[in-house]
Length: 88
Image (cartoon, rainbow, N blue to C red; front, side, top):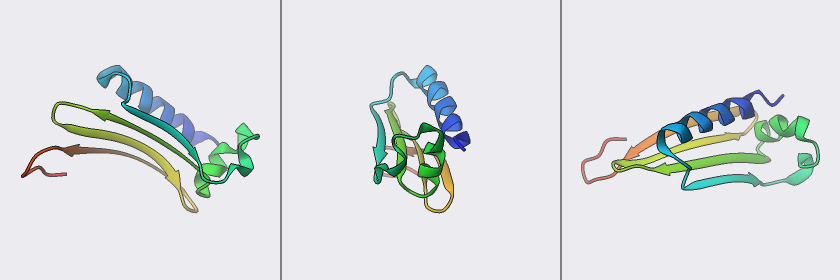
């Protein structure tokens, strides 16, 4: 049930090794129903009760890692380049 949390953790560790400690590192409970049951935190993510978010600032832009859900789990990595004509 916590498979995506494991993927998030592995990606966060790899990105931290490359870019250092994240500037922003949050675990947000929108509904704490499953908070006392760690074995169900993957379910909490899937139904939108729990979100994980980390962000790193680089010289060129911002790198974000996010795990959230809304009837499914969504794990994403995004890099946004700073500047006037930057592509995302």
